Image: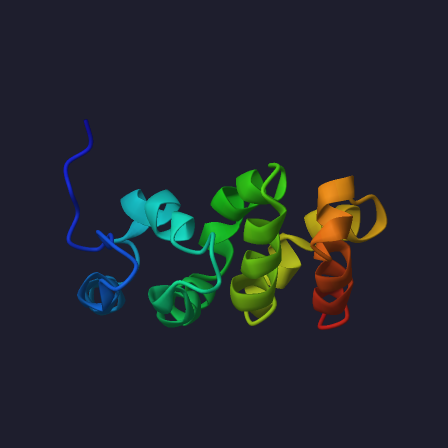
Length: 127
C-alpha cells in the first residue's frame, strides 16, 4: 500500500496539498504525478483549477503519464487535461503533438461525444 504523500490531495477541497506540491516542485512531486493527474478527472472539482497550472508548468516530463490517459477511455478526463494542462504548456504540446493529432483525426465515439477531437484540434493550432 502506498504511503500518503503531503503533495496528494485527500479530497476535492484539499488546496493545502496542492500548495505543498507547488512549493516542492519537480522532481519532488515526480513520484506522485499519476495521483495528481487523477485530480484532473473532473473539471468541477475546486482544486482542479488550482492544480492545472502547476501540472502545465512541469512540461514535457509529464508527457508519458498524460499519454497513458489520452490512450484510455475517459473522454472527460482527456478533454480536461488537453484544455487545462496540455494546451497551456508549449513543451507538452510539442511532446504530445502526435497524440493530439490522433485524437483530432480518429476520435472514438465517446471522445467525439465529449468533444475531445475539437479540443485536440484547438490545441494543435497553438503549435
